[in-house]
Every structure is written in C-alpha cells, then in structure tokens.
Amino acid sequence: MTNVYVHGVGMTQFGTFVDRTMKDLLLDACIQALKEAGNPKVDAVYVGNFMGGSIYNQEILGAIVANELGLGFIPTAKVEGACASGGIAVRQGVIGIQSGEYETVLVAGVEKMKHASTADVTQAINAAMDNDSNEKRAGLTFPGFFGVLANRYFYETDASKKHLALVALKNRENAIHNPLAQFRKPATLEEIMEARMITNPLGLFDCSPMTDGAAAIVLSSKKSPVHVRASAQSSGPTQMQDADDLLSIPAIKESGRLAYEKAGVGPEDIDVVEIHDCFSMTEMLAIEELGFFRKREGWRAVEEGRTKVTGDKPVNTSGGLLSRGHPIGATGISQLYQLVHQLRGTAPNQVEGNPRLALSQNLGGTGSYSVVHILERV
Amino acid sequence: MKIFACTNCDYHSVTSKYTCPKCQQGKLQETEVSASGTVYSFTDIHIAPAEFAHIAPYTVALIQLDEAPVKVTARMDAEVQIGDSVELKGLEEGAFIYTKAD
Image (cartoon, rainbow over all chains, first blue to last red; front, top):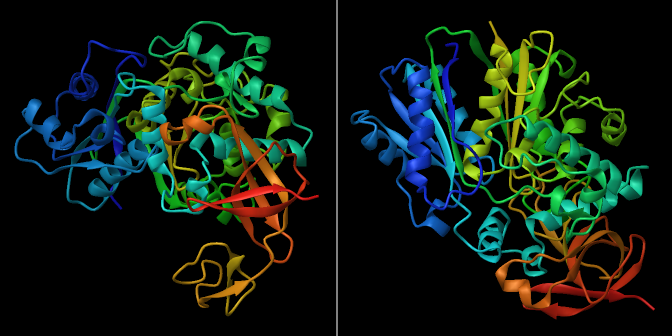
C-alpha cells in the first residue's frame, strides 16, 4: 500500500476571535501548512467542520479553500463526524493517497463558535446525539452523558472528583506553555474542584470550552520525516441506554485496536499521545480503552503523574481539548499538529528522549465515532 | 414497558434495531416487561440546551430494569443516587419520567 507522509502543518491561535471570520481562520491554517510543505501541487482538499451550517450559515468549505487559494478545479469536500470531523477528514486524505487517486492532499478543520450564545451552541452540539430518541427527549445532553459515566466510575472504583480535577489540572499546566492554546492562565486544584457545576460531578474545568480556531495538514505519498503509520476508524452506540458496559466506549477501543494492528505496534510502544478529552472523564476512559492502563485503573495512573509530560505515557502535551480549546472541526487536526512537532522535537512541552511513535485519538458524539492515527518519525 | 429481545441470542434493548447488533442474525421481537428498576447512574444537568433551559437543573438517570437486561434513559422528578429503586411515573413528550419507589 502507498505510504503517506506529513509535509506541513498549520494552526491558528485557539480562543475567541470576534474580528475574524471562519473563512479567515480556515485559510490562515491552510496557508501555514502549504508554506511549510513548500507549496506543492494539491490534488484534493478535505475540510472537517461540524456546525458551520447550523450556527454560522456557511457550507461549501472545501470549494472555498480551493478557490481562495487558487488550487484549481480539484475535488474537495466537507467532512462531518461531530467532534471527530477533523480526524475523519484526515483519514479521507490518507485513504485518497493510499488508493493511488491523489499524490498530495490538503486537509483542514475549522469551527467558529464564540459568536453564538451558550444555549444555542449547546443546542447545536446536541445534534451529535440521536435526537429522535426517548433519551434526547428526557433532556440528556452531551456533557450530561459524561456526567452519568463519571458517577458510575466513582461508584465502581475508588476514584473521586479529585482525580478528574487532576486531569484538568495537568492539561491546564500543559496549555500554559502552548502559545496557541485558549487557556494559558494557571489554575489551582482547589479552583477546579470548586468551580461552577455543569453536569454533576463535572464542573466548568472538567468540560472543554467553546472555541474559534482552525488547523491544517498537508499529506503526500512523497517521503518526509513523519510517516502516517496507521489510520483507523470505528463507530459505536449513539445512545447511552444501548451501552453494553457504561464504562467502556467501544469505538475508542476498536479504533485503537485496529490502529495498533495496522501499525504492528502496541500501546506500550507509543511515546506521546493526544486524546480527545472533551471532558476530564473522557480522558480517564480513553487512556484505559487505548490500553495504556488497565480498565478502571486510569485514575491511579493520573494520581501517580504517569500521564504528565514527565510521565511514562505523556497525554495531551498541547493542553488537550480542556485547555488548548475545542473548535470542533479543527480538533482532530490540531492533535496531529502537536504530535508532528513532538516528533520533530519542536513541541511546546517537548517530551524528552526523541519520541518516535505518537498516537492521536479523536472522538465524535457520545462515543459514536472514533479515529486513531499513529505517526512515526522516520 | 415495551422492550425488544433477539430471537436468536440473549440481546435485549429498549430501542428496536433492524438486525440484532450482537449476533447479527436474529431479529428483535417486541415484549412487555415491568418498568420498575434501579438507578444505574445519573447526573444533574445545570447547563441545559435552549429547549430544556426552563426546567434546569434537572436529573437524568440511566435505569436498570428489574425484569430484563435492559437500561433506559429517563428524567427523574427528584434527585436520586445510584441504587435507588424507581418506577415509571408516565410519559411526557416522548420522555420517560421516573419517580422514586416507595
């Protein structure tokens, strides 16, 4: 099969940008990535985006990128997979190159959320659930789902709200050193524990914020120092009441299993990780589902500092969704932005010891989609 | 309460499916069981989407039914804890509303 390599990455600052349009952010990230790649001829464009249509009244993002950048009459598409839109867009680029159809693909992701009210954005995010269901009609929300999981996790283990706060604190500490992160102000464990409640037991710091931002990546079959060793995707239950085991997100587990199989490596071989911490609870489950720690024991690893930059399995050195920010369609690509820099040795919170294998995991919906990419320094 | 059971394996669900997602062979057949159950987990939703903002904060629980290996998502009429016995109070705009059992 054709090998796929990363030739350039780009990312805007994540945060609140009242004076910048969605197009402006999107093109900024694309131009950075193309420049870094040496402005190659691009054969196709994929754009990850979730709510451009519903709260920004803007679709046709693929064609806008090709037209504004003067890339010619190439095929383009917008890719939607809730919060996994960016990761799925990258995967479409990888598959397009592996198939032999394209040599070089530009993949970008963008979201503009801060212009709308919290209630309207929460409503738009709820489109990532199965809305024709008794579950949605009961009033379950996206953060509500992870609140239900967290209470059960506490019930079945010796973990408590403090362990979720330790996840949020770690990611905040990492974001302080990331110049592109949304939240760079230090927070204390006490402040995190006592923050305003969103969905019991999850407080404000346990939930990823609303964010404006964009990220982009140029992939090619031509060789570069960063090889896409595996790209895998899975789907899972779209309703909480259909979960076989509430403390498992099978889409994460299965996408991880497939990625390890394709790459011929195991969780023990991965040097640095970016995973989808839309909520502190999600990071706790994902580090278990991806096999880094045993089921129902992720909280112990967090307590022991094993997922810190200095730990044996550094997770979310960018600050993660919780503190780097979560502009939905851009998130999956911003994870790769951080990992490419880790493999180049130029990342904020650079992991020591020349990391060779890096893993990203991007989740969509309440466990509905999961995408895992494994990158290798070659 | 109406639930669905696979004709070929032990899979049960509160929602119907075209094919059994467990054995991928059987069909799901409708059956009736008691709606009584136990709170498996829950959350209190303080920040709600626009359409539910007027009733926030409210409690959503995942109920384990007593008579079948099925969980149901429901809104509670009061705060609950894991392990509480609950029963169906009624349906409200397509939502199961549960209350604590006496």
